[in-house]
Image (cartoon, rainbow, N blue to C red):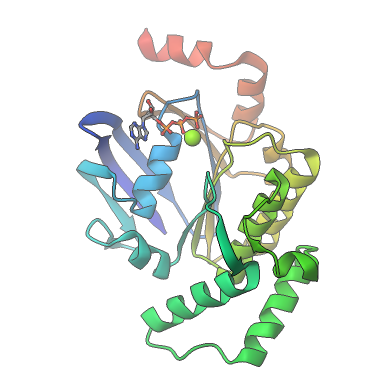
Length: 250
Ligand SMILES: Nc1ncnc2c1ncn2[C@@H]1O[C@H](COP(=O)(O)OP(=O)(O)OP(=O)(O)O)[C@@H](O)[C@H]1O
Ligand SMILES: [Mg+2]
């Protein structure tokens, strides 16, 4: 699905990613953990194709295709979904309308007509029921006055609607309460299939009790310095990152 080779990236001439190697196969869930400032969100942004980041070396292959030259929007159309670490507010645009626009833009990129209104309604109903989202919420202005948990719920709704091949969830920003954690986890678990893959960036071992990862990677100073199974997340929770830093610096 996703294959990252020797990826180096910088922002404003500052080198942030310093040789990332990562392969995510279809059907797998990977988690990335690591200290603040280690480059986790940068990695997510670079894979999603955000412009402010410059790839200085290495390759990113999505299903064997080099996506380096593709704009963020094109990558999204190819099935890469990045949750917003800081979601934007769009007054006057409802959750539903935003979603309709996104879905139809996706279809257009594939040469398809707009989704018929009744089909769209059915899809919205199905996915919102699955995620226990109520009607009132769907008609609210996008992210305007949303609580942290509501933002999460909306994000997961977007993911469920778009059914991405690779979903990247950057959960570092907010203090998610137990409910929000469950929302994120339920959404991901329901979306999971043998044909897609999920990359979760998190500081919370707790989240990984709900979304059980196949692999856990530790990013430190722009490199993946340790990989393991889900037990690695428990070890980090218990021991912190110092032992890893010591290993790396030894
Ligand atoms: N757009 C940007 N402009 C300037 N510096 C940036 C930018 N994006 C990232 N950086 C810098 O790159 C480094 C890595 O940041 P990044 O956000 O990837 O860390 P992180 O691992 O996600 O941290 P956290 O756990 O706090 O979310 C930091 O030093 C940060 O200041
Ligand atoms: Mg981050």
